[in-house]
Amino acid sequence: MESKNPFFRTKSFTKTTAAGTNSYETRAIDYSETMTVSGTINKSFILLLLLLSTALGTWFLASSGYNPMILVIGGAIIGLILVVVSSFKPHLSPYLAPAYALFEGLFIGGISAVFEVMYPGIVIQAVGGTFVTFIVCFGLYKYNIVKVTEKFKSVVIAATMAIAVYYLITWLLNMFTGYQAVHYGNSMMSIGISVFVIVIAALNLFLDFDQIEKGALENKPKYMEWYGAMGLMVTLVWLYIEFLRLLSKISSRD
Image (cartoon, rainbow, N blue to C red; front, side, top):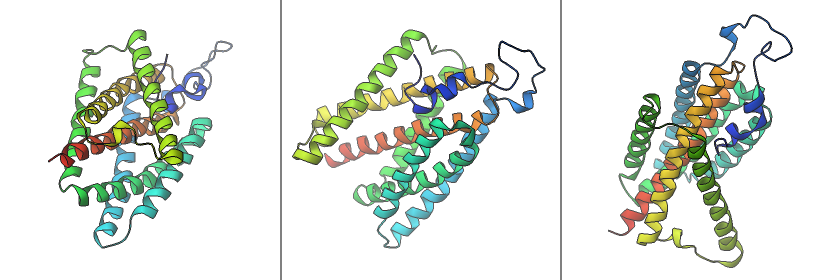
């Protein structure tokens, strides 16, 4: 069982190794050309800065009266395409990952601007919630307080898959029948669902940390650092959006 994150579930990540590390021949491994945890973390920060740059740009455009929905939709679609392409072509990650961060920033910046207009102060709360959650999860994993066992993986993956199927079904029903699922409202049940989704998204961070560490131990090629960083960003974006949804529901009840 592996991370629900599409990057870490593909054969590209689980079977890719550095040249010379297969079982048929033995060569000296150049560790400057293999994946490392520190290298992945550094590239994650680079992607975060790129995402913030376009997110802030979209935010300022929205503040100036520009309708950000074109950028939101375009950024989301192109970002998704880049994720799919990279999942099949991980060796292109050094180029696709930065592009993903830039386009995803358009999506995040536009969505954040819309939510901020509706509920002033919500964005900084969502950013804070995402940052604190990441730090707590990273600390718990780093100091082995939470161990990623096979049972842990199976439970998190099952819950994540259930959420994905639920969202897909309710989205299709809403599009074709106008059905409004309970999680669309601001009832206590809807808030409870959002809390549950945030918990599952946070638990996915543990699986992502574990896969990155294993990738380094297995001497994956250097470009897999970009691949791992991009996968981690996917989880963080998901977590941030869910915090926005939760906080908006709570604010709408006031």
